[in-house]
Each structure stands twice: as C-alpha cells, then as structure tokens.
Image 1 (tube, rainbow, N blue to C red):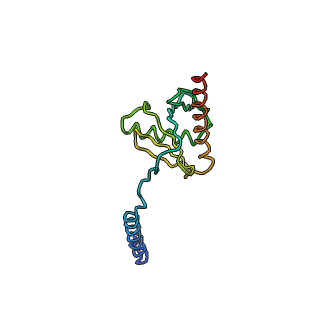
Image 2: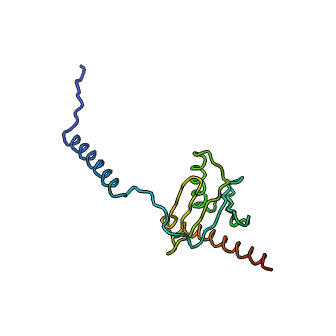
Image 3: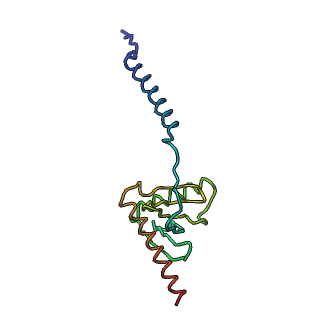
Length: 160
C-alpha cells in the first residue's frame, strides 16, 4: 500500500522566517544610515611611522625589513609571529588582487594616544591594530621599536 504524505510548513515557521527577513532589512538600513559599516581611517598626523617591507620566504620564514635603512627588523620562524604573518598575507592578497607587488612599503604608524595603524598606500588597506588585543598589538609595537632603534643606530653612525 502506498502512503500518501504531504509535507506541511507550519504557519509559525513561515511567520518566523518573515520576521527574520524584516529584522535583517531593518538592521541593514539602520547600519547604512548611522554609518556603522563605514571604513575608518586614522585621524591626524602620526607621531611615528615605520616604512616596512614584508617577505614570506622559504620554509615558513617571514622577514620584516626597514624600507628606510634596509635593516632586518625581525625574522619569524615557521611557527612564530602568527599574527604578523596573517596581517602580512592579508596585505599581500589585497595587492595581488590589484596586480601589485611588494615594492611599495607598508606604513606602521603610531598616533597620539597610542593608536597603532598598519596602512598600505598601494592597496588602500588600513588596519587598526589595537583592535586585535594587547598580545597582537605587542607584536607590531616591537617592530616599531626596532625600527626606531635602527634609525637611531644609523643616525649615530652618520654622526660619528
């Protein structure tokens, strides 16, 4: 004997789906009108800026060099510098999508109040690094400190 089954969509389920769609549209409209989805950029002039060149090398080696002095600022092995590596690859991907290479340095800029931004003038990527937490911020703060040390060492070498 063949069983005649008919699938039924319950009225409450349909009502729930309609409410979900209406709420989604309302949230999208609210976000659009209040600027919640706006892309933010740093305000004012930076207190300090490091011009950096990143390179993803063989066997997982990632290097960060100063574009100004040419000094190697930091080098991460295969399982080190995970956050720096992720940010570097994000910038590299954005550049690849636009047909650009690594020639233009990335700017690591510290602003008044301690805000640290990674700004890529080539691709237009701006990342507010403080938003990623203190441990990840410390990784880029260390790079900034090493850049400042490199500039001081070069200035002392020239002055001597």
